[in-house]
Length: 71
Image (cartoon, rainbow, N blue to C red; front, side, top):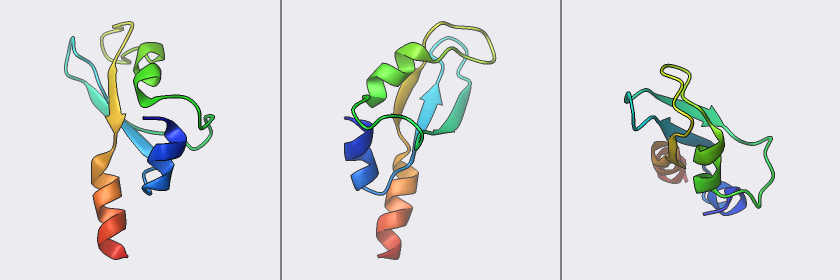
């Protein structure tokens, strides 16, 4: 999924999880180009806890559900 498609659903952040240590965090991605995929971001983000060179990323679905519930 591209960031522009993700944004169309009202989601502006991604959830980042490290497969090595389990560290996780929410990352705001509004400043990034819309043609970048969520999966590509994980390949470019290292874990800030253990230093793993990649993390797993997915849209922050909680944000999307909350946004749709308000409509």
